[in-house]
Amino acid sequence: MITPLEGDYIYSKGVGYLAVKGVVHPPGRVVAIPKYPESSRYISKIVNLEDAYAYLRERMPEAIVFDDHSGQVLPQIPIEKISRHIVARGWFRNNQPRDGLASLSAEFAETVCRYSGIEMEIVGLTGSILLGLHGPSSDIDLVFYSAKNAYPVIEALATLRKEGKTRPVDLRHSHDLEAKRSDSSVPLSEWIRHESRKLLYGTYRGVVYSAKIVPLPDEYWETYGSAIWRELGRVVLTAEVTDDSRSIFTPNEYGIRVLEVVRGPEEGYRCGVLASLRSRFAEQAKIGERVRVSGRLEVDLKSWSYRIFIGNHREDYLLTLSDTS
Image (cartoon, rainbow, N blue to C red):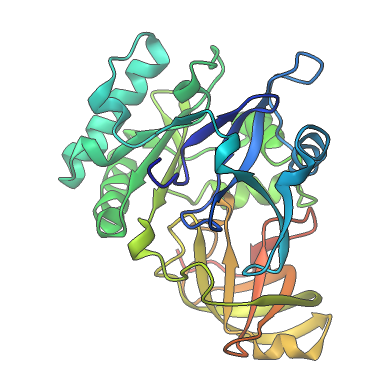
């Protein structure tokens, strides 16, 4: 089996379809979150991360495993339990759209490729459309692979936004955002404020789209086993973004300079990095902006460096206090 990447899905009998998370995995396992359960006793899609863990704990308890690299309990599916690997990358090259939403997704992908100069073969289709489980209200979900394509894609999306071919989300899309952010304590108004600034999220021909830029495993900045992260406690702090060059990726990372530890261990002042596996935090802040962060304070037992990890707790957030745009 080729290495599953962010955007791909795997299928495991008795569990259903799971969304692959990240680009590096523990040996013999794949980090993946249940999304579409096999049993009709459950809702058609699991949105809440807490519900996903509970469902997997019931269906495949051996997959809920402490991960020594991240220092967290993660859903890790044994490779022998995976019966299907649904690959996002190259979907448009290998398939013909069969309905309106798939055709619109292809049109949008082709437009971004034309504006950026990248090849369609590195573009992936993900989400419900990839699985053929989409409906009339589903979104366009695209994935652009390889770090070398990141800036051409962002520049293309910026041009499309300036030309009015895409539009930012606003209050009219609050229902869509409310459903997607139901596992977050952050007010919906704050999510709308941040999502409306993003090029990776918006509307195309009136349909909501989301796009991920995913580095390939050999481009990713943290190889599996290179660190031993351990939690020191939860922290709330204010900081200045000093590096946003990896902010557009999923997984994403920000360089930060801590200004004040509002709550939590004093070691928070030693943090220079904020990291997340979740696409919702991509493009969340820009270099030079001041931000308020709530997350998990971690130390690497190998390098003794410190970071804040966000994305797995409903109280996690990254919110701007200033806007340079």
